[in-house]
Each structure stands twice: as structure tokens, then as C-alpha cells.
Image (tube, rainbow, N blue to C red; front, side, top):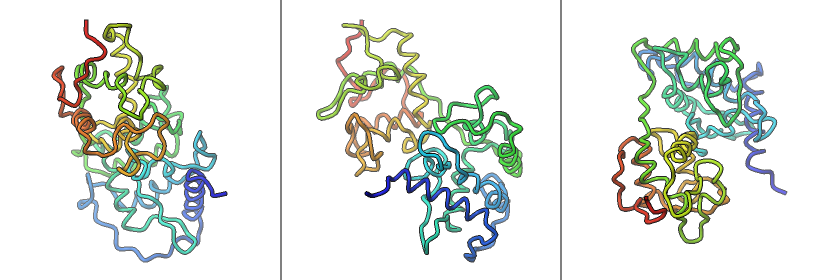
Length: 296
């Protein structure tokens, strides 16, 4: 029997973490670390490489496997916001090459705010909501801002320029959702289930009989859906990634079938415009015009 992809990823993550902690670390020759002035937001690359990047490999537990670290979900293949590179396997070892680490550094820098480290998405996602954190499908890693890992990352973020903030995140337009996006969930395409079949308890609630959704229903659905979107980054948004066919870069599994077989599908393109903050209001593009449900 072939091992599952999750188990392979988990083993790789654990193995790489053990390698990182071993005195016999990878002896690969690397180029000199760039000066902070030449790095994104002035962040210290050497600090990142030595103290922050290894944290992405540390076993976390959770629902995807007892050994899974951040890398198990947050690789570029999974289109997750952290944007980590896939691990390299060579000579019986798993690791990030120097080139991959530098790309990781660039991607991770997008999620930090050196002018206010504690507001950084990189810190707030794994932090307990009771301590001011956000929802994180990978679980809670830190109960408070005093956790040693939190403090290490915060210290690294503070190495950046005081004038460098976090990347601007576009605001998702609620009116466009209510008018143009929400009807998708009850208008299936051929060979695919309606979203409401599985997600009616979340963002795809059924509308009242022979009527449109109430304002309260739409607002709750919007709040639930935003959790599956990475504003400004369509390819990192589960909402646009899960229903996309794997041959077009979508997720390997989606029980409801595939709604789009290409990233150029007009409906998906219209949704990308919304996710990137370029679509607002109640006027819907042709790909998002539906007759059901009827408006009162």
C-alpha cells in the first residue's frame, strides 16, 4: 500500500525538523545572507533562517497527523497564505535549499508588519482568540503573546524597518457578495453538486422558499465565507481553490465535484475580481447573473 500524501508530508516535516536540530546539519554551501537593507521590509534574513524558518517544521499535532508542522498545509502547492516552498528530497534528506529559503523569506515577509509586530497576520493566526488571535484551521499554537515561539517571531519582525507595514489587504465587498456571489451556492453546474448540499450550515445556506435570502442570512453567510478567502490573493483562497480541477491547479479532493476546469473560467475570473477588491456593488457581471432565487 502506498503511503498517503499527508503521511509523506508529515514525515518530511518531522525529519526536516530533526535535521535542523541536529549538530550534523546540512553542510550545503550557501551564498552570503543579504544585507537587511536589501531584503523585504528591511527584515533580517540570517535571523529568519536560523530562528524562524525552523518553527515551520516543528510538529504541531492536530487533525492532519500527529507529526504535521506548518509546512504540511502551508506550501505553495496547497495555495495556503504562508506560501512555503515544497520540501526538497535528495540523498535521503528533506530540506529547503538556500534558494527556497529565500523565497520562503519573501513570502513570509508579506504577512508581517515591522511598524507594529503584534498586528502581524503571521503572529495572530496561530494565537488563541482569547489572547487576541484569529481563527486558524491548523489549530492554536500559542495561548498567549508570552509564548517563546511568539516572542522569537515578534523579535524577528521588529528587525524590519519601522516605516514598513504589512501588505495592504483589500476589503471584501459585502453588497457584491449578497447580489452576485451568494446565488452561486444554489445554482450548480452539470456534473457538480450544489454547494448548499454540503455547506448549508456554513456559507451556503438555502434561501427561503420562493424568496431571496434575508439580510441576516446573507450577512452570516458572508462572515462564514470570508474565513475561506485570503483577500488579495485568489490562488491562496480555499473558496477559489477547492472547486477548481487539479489539472488547473486546484485541490486534489473536493467531494462536491469541480465547478471550474480552468482558472480562465468566466465565473472564476469574476470571483477573482471580487477577492482582489476589484468588484463591488450590486451590478453583477454576466458570469454571475442568476435567475434563482427570485428577488422579492
